Image 1: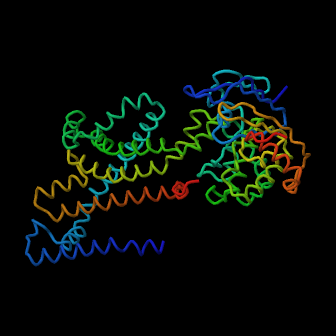
Image 2: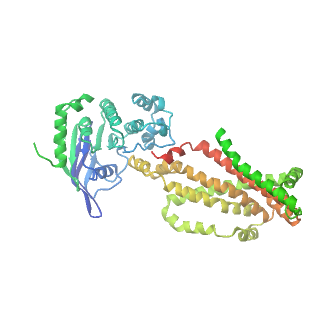
Image 3: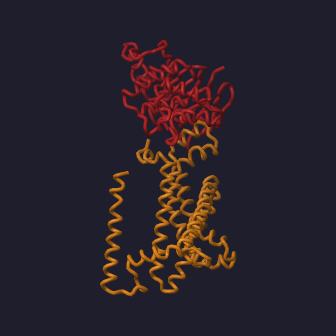
Length: 247
Length: 255
């Protein structure tokens, strides 16, 4: 059974069609990126999966169970870290668990240690740098009890160097825990470097324009980013995205 | 702290200057004491009459504190109910504003007619002046909750209750405290007004007695006592805020 199966999902806002017959299947433990120019329905897809919006048509199934318009089935990491300013880092990363039952501070401490945040467990979010806040936000998503994690352009607000650091870190943590991840981004390199599969979206109404299986084995490391093959893939996806010359 | 003390001297200097001007002009113009007493005279009366004044002071402090506690609890509760039930908010909010337009001076004697001279009408007066700033401040605080935090909580599957208790309420604390600060100073005024209605003791009683017997110096003692009390209440709330809300700085600079 697929972990997430979206079939013929459509959504429009007062006549403005954002999503038309969108299909997506994600297997258990897969890392899938959705790539598309900003202003396409990327975030809408997340809002539909997260249950904030109800689709006009189609179905969203998680482990074979329909979750149309139901909240609380996914773990989420937004664009901004969105840590609660009055909670310390340990309390913050436990928030996802707190919302759905019991907390596991030991495991949280363990993960904070792996993220290099063990000295900051008692610190408040405003004492942390942007990258550290995002790491805490990702740990919060990992610790949440839901089996699927949705990441909504989590690194878009970071500077180039921090972003690369964060991508490497995310990759290492993910390769260890292998949770199912749906990742939204507008950065081709990021999608290629991180994911198993890339879905390229078209302009409004968003439809799957192309789909790529990323051939790189894991664990991946930074040197991959500068290989000719990687650049070739980047070009290919870029053309798929912009509708440039075909190969 | 050192810097704060240094900055703090300015209002004191202005106040001192004011007193000096007051003292000199009263003395040189020869204004009679029952018309306008000089500050030194007021000070010595406060010192000499302390034994007679202090029971009134204690009584007012107690009344103001009790009234403030009840008023702010009702204020916060009203805000929570109105926030969680938007239809009720639309119906009630205008009435709340109207409640602030009733002149307390007119209402107070009516309350005595309805409820007698006991504690109840006094508490009603203080509650009436106290609850409104807190309700308004808390409602604004709930509404201003950072949208990105709210979005995260909703996406993460927080229920309406969780959203309120874990996000909106703690987020509104700085606003609630600005309401509390205003109400704390109002509560002293409310207590004094309610004592005018008829009470055995209290600064309000002391004040009426003093002014009807042309003891202007005592009226001024009462006025300064009210001012100091308000300041003290304000300071207590500010200290409590500093202990409870450690994250206001971050809010202003935004995430």
